[in-house]
Image (cartoon, rainbow, N blue to C red; front, top):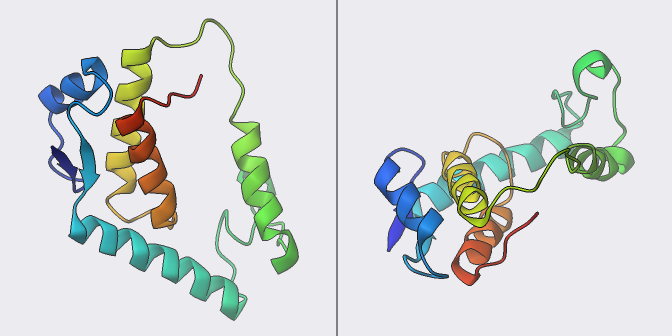
Length: 135
Protein backbone atom coordinates (compact mmCIF):
# COMPACT_ATOMS: atom_id res chain seq x y z
CA UNK A 1 0.00 0.00 0.00
CA UNK A 2 1.15 3.50 -0.80
CA UNK A 3 0.34 6.02 1.91
CA UNK A 4 0.25 9.65 0.79
CA UNK A 5 1.58 12.25 3.19
CA UNK A 6 2.19 15.08 0.74
CA UNK A 7 5.95 14.82 1.11
CA UNK A 8 7.42 11.43 0.30
CA UNK A 9 5.80 10.18 -2.93
CA UNK A 10 8.46 8.71 -5.22
CA UNK A 11 8.71 8.39 -8.97
CA UNK A 12 8.65 4.62 -8.58
CA UNK A 13 5.39 4.79 -6.63
CA UNK A 14 3.83 7.02 -9.29
CA UNK A 15 4.84 4.49 -11.96
CA UNK A 16 3.50 1.59 -9.88
CA UNK A 17 0.07 3.24 -9.57
CA UNK A 18 0.03 4.52 -13.15
CA UNK A 19 0.69 1.09 -14.60
CA UNK A 20 -0.84 -1.08 -11.87
CA UNK A 21 -4.09 -2.98 -11.98
CA UNK A 22 -7.04 -1.41 -10.16
CA UNK A 23 -6.23 -1.35 -6.47
CA UNK A 24 -2.70 -2.69 -7.03
CA UNK A 25 -1.10 -1.04 -5.24
CA UNK A 26 -3.79 0.38 -2.98
CA UNK A 27 -3.41 4.07 -2.20
CA UNK A 28 -4.38 5.64 1.12
CA UNK A 29 -3.90 8.82 3.11
CA UNK A 30 -1.64 9.16 6.13
CA UNK A 31 -3.41 10.07 9.37
CA UNK A 32 -1.34 13.23 9.75
CA UNK A 33 -2.15 14.27 6.19
CA UNK A 34 -5.86 13.67 6.79
CA UNK A 35 -5.64 15.83 9.91
CA UNK A 36 -3.84 18.59 8.00
CA UNK A 37 -6.44 18.54 5.23
CA UNK A 38 -9.20 18.69 7.84
CA UNK A 39 -7.58 21.66 9.60
CA UNK A 40 -7.28 23.60 6.35
CA UNK A 41 -10.91 22.88 5.43
CA UNK A 42 -11.98 24.03 8.89
CA UNK A 43 -9.99 27.23 8.41
CA UNK A 44 -11.92 27.92 5.20
CA UNK A 45 -15.19 27.37 7.04
CA UNK A 46 -14.05 29.79 9.74
CA UNK A 47 -13.22 32.42 7.11
CA UNK A 48 -16.68 32.03 5.66
CA UNK A 49 -18.37 32.22 9.07
CA UNK A 50 -16.49 35.40 9.92
CA UNK A 51 -17.21 36.94 6.55
CA UNK A 52 -13.52 37.52 5.90
CA UNK A 53 -12.18 38.32 2.46
CA UNK A 54 -10.01 35.52 1.06
CA UNK A 55 -8.79 35.25 -2.52
CA UNK A 56 -10.70 32.65 -4.51
CA UNK A 57 -12.97 31.86 -1.58
CA UNK A 58 -14.88 35.08 -1.05
CA UNK A 59 -13.41 36.91 -4.05
CA UNK A 60 -13.23 36.23 -7.74
CA UNK A 61 -10.06 35.01 -9.44
CA UNK A 62 -7.44 36.82 -11.52
CA UNK A 63 -8.80 40.05 -12.97
CA UNK A 64 -11.86 39.62 -10.71
CA UNK A 65 -9.82 39.37 -7.52
CA UNK A 66 -11.39 42.59 -6.21
CA UNK A 67 -14.96 41.35 -6.71
CA UNK A 68 -16.36 40.27 -3.37
CA UNK A 69 -18.54 37.16 -3.52
CA UNK A 70 -21.52 37.00 -1.19
CA UNK A 71 -21.87 34.00 1.11
CA UNK A 72 -24.86 32.71 -0.83
CA UNK A 73 -22.75 32.69 -4.04
CA UNK A 74 -19.57 31.10 -2.66
CA UNK A 75 -20.69 27.58 -3.62
CA UNK A 76 -21.53 28.73 -7.14
CA UNK A 77 -18.09 30.38 -7.45
CA UNK A 78 -16.39 27.08 -6.59
CA UNK A 79 -18.61 25.15 -8.99
CA UNK A 80 -17.89 27.63 -11.77
CA UNK A 81 -14.12 27.42 -11.31
CA UNK A 82 -14.30 23.63 -11.62
CA UNK A 83 -16.52 23.85 -14.70
CA UNK A 84 -14.25 26.46 -16.29
CA UNK A 85 -11.30 24.08 -15.94
CA UNK A 86 -13.24 21.01 -17.07
CA UNK A 87 -12.63 21.52 -20.76
CA UNK A 88 -9.75 20.55 -22.95
CA UNK A 89 -8.61 20.10 -26.48
CA UNK A 90 -6.95 17.23 -28.26
CA UNK A 91 -7.03 13.55 -27.52
CA UNK A 92 -7.75 12.37 -23.96
CA UNK A 93 -4.80 11.16 -21.92
CA UNK A 94 -4.19 7.44 -21.72
CA UNK A 95 -5.11 5.62 -18.51
CA UNK A 96 -1.58 5.48 -17.01
CA UNK A 97 -1.21 9.25 -17.46
CA UNK A 98 -4.61 9.90 -15.86
CA UNK A 99 -3.75 7.64 -12.93
CA UNK A 100 -0.40 9.38 -12.46
CA UNK A 101 -2.03 12.82 -12.52
CA UNK A 102 -4.71 11.75 -10.04
CA UNK A 103 -2.10 10.34 -7.66
CA UNK A 104 0.15 13.39 -7.86
CA UNK A 105 -2.82 15.75 -7.35
CA UNK A 106 -4.01 13.75 -4.32
CA UNK A 107 -0.49 13.83 -2.91
CA UNK A 108 -0.29 17.61 -3.36
CA UNK A 109 -3.68 18.06 -1.70
CA UNK A 110 -2.53 15.79 1.15
CA UNK A 111 -0.15 18.54 2.25
CA UNK A 112 -3.16 20.38 3.68
CA UNK A 113 -2.55 23.78 2.10
CA UNK A 114 -5.52 24.04 -0.26
CA UNK A 115 -8.54 24.13 2.05
CA UNK A 116 -10.18 21.27 0.15
CA UNK A 117 -12.45 18.94 2.10
CA UNK A 118 -11.04 15.59 3.22
CA UNK A 119 -13.90 13.82 1.43
CA UNK A 120 -12.65 15.19 -1.89
CA UNK A 121 -9.14 13.80 -1.43
CA UNK A 122 -10.60 10.48 -0.29
CA UNK A 123 -12.82 10.41 -3.39
CA UNK A 124 -9.79 10.79 -5.67
CA UNK A 125 -8.09 7.89 -3.88
CA UNK A 126 -11.25 5.76 -4.01
CA UNK A 127 -11.44 6.40 -7.74
CA UNK A 128 -7.81 5.32 -8.18
CA UNK A 129 -8.33 2.21 -6.09
CA UNK A 130 -11.45 1.26 -8.08
CA UNK A 131 -10.18 2.22 -11.55
CA UNK A 132 -12.58 5.11 -12.05
CA UNK A 133 -10.79 7.52 -14.36
CA UNK A 134 -12.01 10.88 -15.61
CA UNK A 135 -11.52 11.75 -19.27
